[in-house]
Amino acid sequence: MSGGPTTRMNLLRAARRLERVTRGVGLLRKKREALVSELFRLARPAADARGEITNAARRAYPALLGALALHGRTGLRALAWPGRDLTVEVEPGSVWGIVVSRITARPPLGRRRTAPSGSPPGCGPRSLR
Image 1 (cartoon, helix red, strand yellow):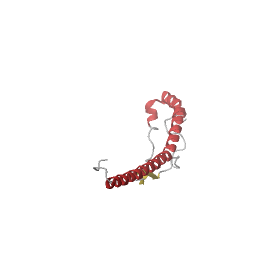
Image 2 (image 1 turned 135 degrees about the vertical axis):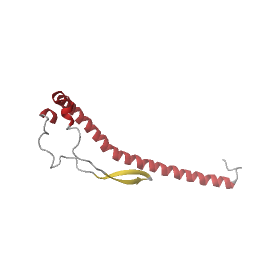
Image 3 (image 1 turned 180 degrees about the vertical axis):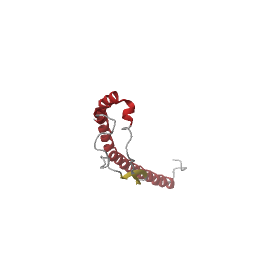
Image 4 (image 1 turned 60 degrees about the horizontal axis):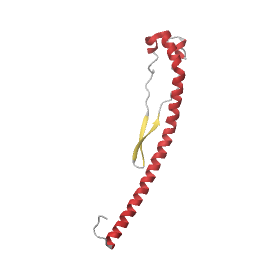
């Protein structure tokens, strides 16, 4: 004990301190569990999406090589950038006092009605697989 000699008063003070520390440890444990559960809730879809992206990239790579061989780098450059801006609305939030952000609105990522239905001019079928 750092409170001086062992007296009844110091013993009561140490008991109260131990009680506060025990409650604090319990609160920190609950906070950690809440944060971990929130992390897993958010990370699972991200991990699944990463796997889907990896599979799509693995399937697309041979098509990219074929298109590069047929049209060259400059022939595919026109297809490389999206034809529109993508904006996402983010709202700040809090989980047990830790600042987190939540996506509240995002544009649909499908093909727009105004998008060209055929291939862009100057690119062949090999680049559209």
